[in-house]
Image (cartoon, rainbow, N blue to C red; front, top):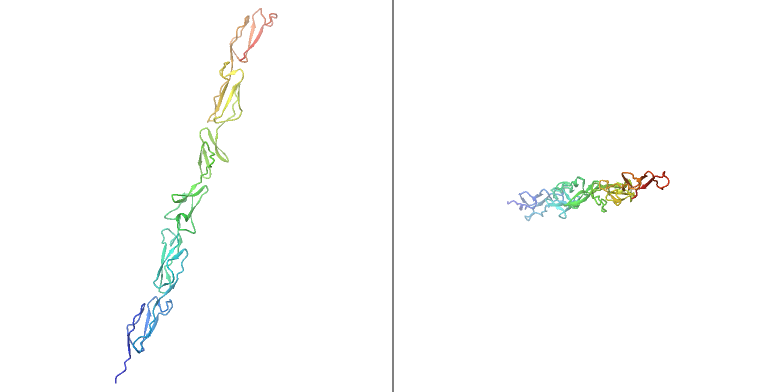
Length: 343
């Protein structure tokens, strides 16, 4: 008798992302499919990775399932970063994450501005990095604030270097931007009211000083100023009087006038006024001497003996009558008389 032979279904067909034994199967025999690593039947990391099919009476296998890539879900973006894609990532899928402006993965200017994450076979995302505020005070800029302050990196950067740091300056200095770099520069303390005139204001730290011209000196009565040098009050001069007793300062003058009976030459028609000037070295110059006016020699008087020598304003000339003569022609005791020297 002839024996019955089971119907053959042949070798089970292959599927994407799965493996199956290459063995011929006959009616009612099963074959097991196994999903490759990173694939499951429901795409879940803990989902089943195997299924079986049976050989049917008509020589075909029952329906097959498919192996789905494991899903890692949508990534949680770290602080100060943004996704470049959308939706969930599945096994072997990658996505670039970009740091916000002003951030890098190292916190330095040379650090990467992005990183790539990858969905692994177990449903985990790898490759995450943190985005750190770029230190705008450090390399490659090396901001020193002119060594008169401290560079302070801003906590919330914009990505524009010049806007992302500031200089905290020492007393007397202020932050200025020159040639595209912030620094600490001495605050100009020279007032706009030009108190140093006619001198020059020289700025210092938290102060200023006046560089004064010849004949002036710096004074500080709250603020520095250039003041004229003081020569003091006009001195008292013999036989002369000053037009003012007020103290003289540089370039001021005072007029002197000789007293009656005095001139600068001692002559009756000589000059009787002169001017004294206060000089840069605080000295009063052009001081002169008022001399008594000369009357010359005593004039001759008949029948009298004249005094000898030169006589000056204020002098009295004593004349003596000769023997037998008097001043009144009566009393011989009245034999002397005086003559005043007047201008």
